[in-house]
Length: 218
Image 1 (spheres, helix red, strand yellow):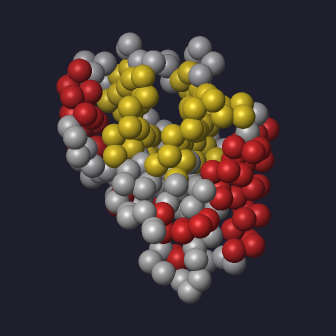
Image 2 (cartoon, one colour):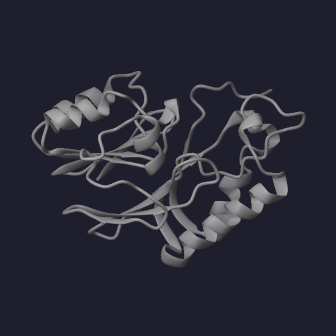
């Protein structure tokens, strides 16, 4: 198994007979294009955590329509907001959704933003958590870019995030991989959610994401 970082919040899980692509938006270095060509005649699964532009590429539905072995698993809000044909998805991801494929089991959890977070369990026991936009979004004061989208207090945000972590821990007290936002816009709090996750759940490999389009604060 190989886990490739593509860009921003996109990762590609490469196995011998299938490929999973999480939250594809852009392919700056052409790595995903190379992988998709390699897996042109094999099963490819595009998992989409939510509809935000930086987690979704509008080419995906057309690709899946043209190749019967390529599958799209979008969140419920992505189907609605991106107007994806409801007949196209292999499954629509909602809270508590459990999807079984020949290659893995996918379970959806809540998010502190829109859409879902997910855990993928492979047949060999490998588990991969992709947070999407699930994080403890503690934006600095006064509110800046992104903070205006947060509709709850900082205390409510923290309680919601920790409750999601507890829900995941019930089924997965240990994770092989965790792909999680480390967002420079949060300033000194950019690692808060990540550290809370790591304190609660044993994670073998931690993969930061969601930072490539933002500058690191001084």
